[in-house]
Length: 250
Image (cartoon, rainbow, N blue to C red; front, side, top):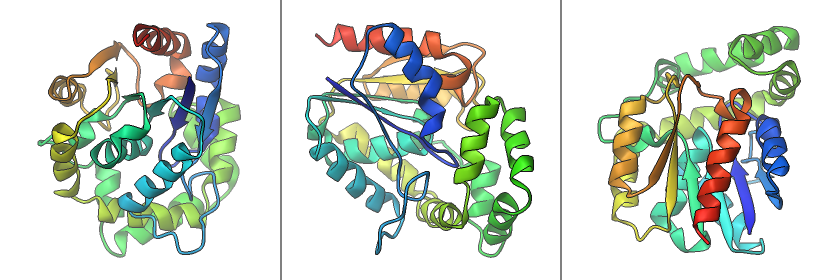
């Protein structure tokens, strides 16, 4: 079974390193990290960085792989997984994702997302993100809980192309987009799924994530005391949960 992992914003695939190592120790192989255009990967000519364009990209990538596929999404990667479930759930055997609160009816975008969604303000925030010394960006990521190695990779991937993709993606996903996406996912004929809930992820409230897991008929695993980058801070617990989940699928 191919295990495909999709990260989010403002990230690159280095974020999966500790989790991949932990999964390998458990005998889980055939791991593939997909980087969305603009987020650690080049932006193809004509790519418009809308949520729909990212779903198109993800479907094309998965259809080119040998299946069956177990798909895992984090942050906006989870958003792309939800977009795929709403449109093409047939291309995966199973899914797992954090940030399920993104598609809850009561979800409100966090403060930074709302800033990106505002004309002119968003451009100023992005300029501050990509400007300055890379050492300062690395230090910021380390302060947020990433290792120096992963922080360095992420800081290096944070460039003007990523900034443009961030602005388009978040502006196109302003509410009620995510709420309506949630309605489509709930109505879809979905494969089995699991919601990863990091109890201290302040971008996506854990209670809303738990409610969405129930609405989706998905299993859930709560990583107590873990924040947004749980795959870095708790790779062993996350690997155990994923390996057990996949084993249970037969």
